[in-house]
Structure formats: structure tokens, C-alpha cells
Length: 418
Ligand code: DI6
Ligand code: FE
Image 1 (cartoon, rainbow, N blue to C red):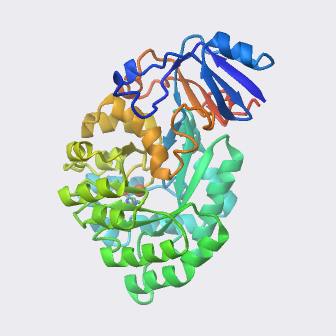
Image 2: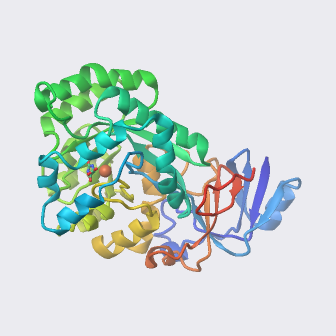
Image 3: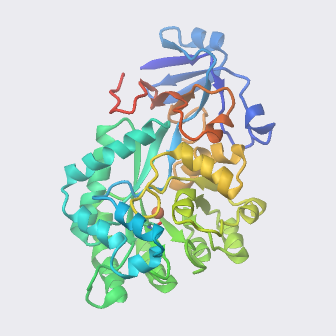
């Protein structure tokens, strides 16, 4: 299948394009893209591409702004139940940590998740996923982490793969191996870490269902030593790692992530200068999750200025999860990252495209509009790239293109036009 998309205002988000004159100035001099079998075969003028690909289907984008398809690189979107009652308790003054320590929080979602089968887990996630598709998302990271014991963790990872078969969407699946200790686990957290390393991780690796391994390094979750143990096992099994780091306290999680060459370190509200320097040395991406910061009413923002000055790549994600970030909009996450964390609009657009692809280890395949990459595009009904960050709501997306195939945009399950 050959398609030529003509008369676009291409924001390629190639490294250096923004610096060349700001993303607004980063509009490419070319206005057309040729896609052959789902991959970008050429970028050029409409006349040139119409000539080179004379038999192609031509799609006129009528001068619309076109970015790479958006990438949500951190979600816990497969889960059962919801936690609105917990929100009411927190609004009444209880803390997230105290609710978690009392057996609520993640454990309550784990109980609701265990009651659902694989197809039910995929089905309950779909409305949340369709909301992200309506924001222009073409790649989604989905973590497990509410299964806690092996069979349900595998069920969640299979549900993530099922979602990839149900929607025109690329899915990166992450095994969130150490999220929280199951209640009454023999041997407590150390016993659970031993079970993860000796049984769960090898089984998940053998299943081929996970592209990476994640953990929660926090006072209410796992220590640096315990996470290091899990990451050693992941390394032996050949699985890349990422880490929920320094979200509620400075556990020196950023330095731990860097020590293991993690793809990303996520949250980072309490990371210090040493952690930032370690991330810069390791090339680990800082994934900023403003939805959790906002919903937990946190006051200390991640050290964005230090990350920027150290040259640490910054991505933005929804962290869609029922406890700390019930957010099903990547565009809203961009707005929050700008307003709450002080990212520029250029950094926000790069944070949900190029840098989000880097955080998933897929930048060679997508995240910018460049020849050879997957033809994943978001076509917008806004004039300026900054308008994607500026408004909350409003549905600015005109159309998504995933692997070169035009897709209608609609909140309901989009049928695929191939
Ligand atoms: N950090 C978070 O914010 C989520 N998990 C994590 O490691 C919270 C998940 C939940 O509360 O359900
Ligand atoms: Fe998370």
C-alpha cells in the first residue's frame, strides 16, 4: 500500500529542529510524506512525491499541522475497579501513604483486578484507551502491576497484547514486577522479592509478554536494595528496566535507575542534583508525570531546570492509573507539565513524541517524522504547535495515522480504514 499525504505543515520533531528556530519555526520546508507499507519512504514537496509515487493514493491534508503520532510512555491502564472512594478520603484529609499502609490503594485495585479475566481486563481498559486515541496517541505503554501474583500479572500482560489486536495502536508492555507487597505474603517484602526473582521474572521473560521491567522504589513499596535485586535478575534475563523513582521521597531512585542503565526514571519529584547528574551520565530519560503530582496535590515539582541544564531528555506521560492519576488525556498531561512543571511548549511536544519514544527504547522506529520510521502521524485542527499544550479539552485532533493507514478520529472504537 502506497499513500502520499500532501499539503501538510510538518512538525518532524527531529532532534535539532526545535533549536533551529523553535518548533513553530521547526515547521519543515517540505509539505508531503510518502508511506510505503506503513513506513515513511520519502519526505518532500507534493509535486516531487506525486511524481515519484504516481500510483499512490493521495490524501490532501489541506495545510493542517502534522506531528508524529503521540506516545504515552507510562500507563497502568489495565486494571479492575476504580478508587473514587479513596479520593473522598484524601479530600477529607487522609494521605495517599496512610491509605496504602492501611491496606487500601494498590492492594484494593489488585483485588478488583484479580476478579476479572483477560478479555474483561481488556474490555474495561478500552474506553480509557479510546480517550487517548482521540488525543492522537499511536503508541501506548501498558504496565502490569495490579496482579501481584504471577498468574494475574501474566493475565494483565496478555490483556495488553489483546488491546494491541483490538485497536490500531502500538503497545509496549512492561512487567511492573515490584509494585507493592501482597498482604500477608510469607517473608514480607524480602520474601516477595525472592519470589519475583526466582519464579515470576523468569516466567514473564519466558512468556515473551514483557518488553521491559519496572519497580516502585518508595517508602511504601520497595527499598533501593530490593529494587537492585529485581533489576539484577531482569538484566540476567535480558530485559531493559525503568523505575518509579523519588515520587514521594528522595530514595535516590534516580541514581539507582541510572546505575542499571534504565530506559527511564519516572516521577522524580524528590530527585536531587546527584540523581540528575547520574541520569545525564547514563542517558536515562526523565519521564514526568504531572497527573499524579496534580491529583496527589503535591507541592514539590521535579527538578526540571536542573534536568534541562544537565541535558537529561524529558518525556511526559499520563501515568493513567486509578489511584494517583486517573487521567486519560495525554494532551492534558502536556498542559499540566507546562503549567505545573514549567516545561516549554517545545519541550512538551517533544516530550510526548521523540523523548517518549526514547523512554520506550523505540526511537529508531518512531517518535519523529523521518524516512525509515513507522508512518505514525497526528493531524491537527490547530494552527500553532503551542495550541496543543494551551487548551484543556476541545478535541484538537483531526485524524490519526497509524502505520500509514488513515484512521477516522472518534471517541468510540474507531474502525480502521485500510
Ligand atoms: N506510583 C504511582 O503513582 C502508581 N504506582 C506507582 O508506583 C500508583 C498506583 C495506584 O495507586 O494504584
Ligand atoms: Fe506509574
